[in-house]
Image 1 (cartoon, one colour):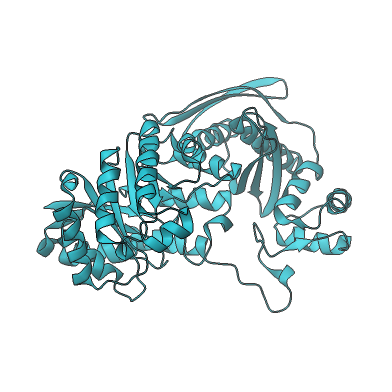
Image 2 (cartoon, rainbow, N blue to C red; image 1 turned 30 degrees about the vertical axis):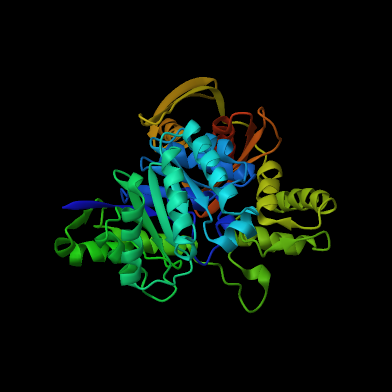
Length: 469
């Protein structure tokens, strides 16, 4: 029986939410949830030039055991940066996205067929220089000239691509047409012998899973899916296909299906776009909502209303401090979003004595070991040590702190971002803990993002301790 591979694109193609709209916390939660399903690979969207994307990739790479595939668009100049963002993963790989239809080649890359083959050879070779496993994705393969497509696939394999993905981006093929299309690749590209072939099928006509099944019957080894409907076959559909028709098609798949429904439900909750109420856009459940903004014309009552919607219960004195800091920021910017307001609250509200202070910490992490953290804190002149194990270095550090204090607080939100540019860039972390229904936020800054995260957690913890006392 042939074991097919299932590659999840939820972080790359999140459906009704644009990938750029996902917060750092949401990306981590999605990655952690998908990792539990033990799929063959999790795909990340192209990072572009955004530092925040690189940081989120690095954090995801440190916390998942599943193969992590980072998409990179041909000719974008970010191959090395993309590789650096995932190189710490247990099983990292690069997925080069390449338009192969005449229209898309000229529109996207401004190149004719001969020049495109040269670019494919150059870019695949560069990916292979950094990464052992390179995938070549023919983005609009079903609209390409077949002779050119065969040459492009052959060129990619000759320069180091170990996996080929054929994409029916437009969703123009019926199942039997797609099966013949896949068979044509094997017949006309001798180098495909021994090379894994995956398919990415649009569900434009509602036949995505049928086309995927036909491709598997024609020799494809893997199917790209999403956990929630996003215009492609879904995890639930491929699981049903394997369960119902696996014996007949002589296929099987490695995937934990026992809690699949619950997992999909969790992901649907995360990816569901927020809907503003009819009364006011300020009544939206906040967090990282892009539609909620404040400006210098908003008075203190409006700012207090938004902070309460965000889950904070501040004293009259802290509300005044937050509003004063808010005005300083608002007078320099056109608007202040909830992320900025989070940072303002963390740095100005409820500043308290340090009940806990960081003495030192040691973090061990790698792609073949579980992350561990050894923290030494000081409280009331007494030093206490804790050791934690986690899905990544930050998770391990937070677990070590919980071991020291002997209590678990709900992590309501966690954000990181760069403050400065360059190799010695400063990283800022924001941690929001929930205790007895109240939100306590802390901020930390360091050239080490793990150190910034620890400092942010301790800052929030000190506020809880002070309030409880």
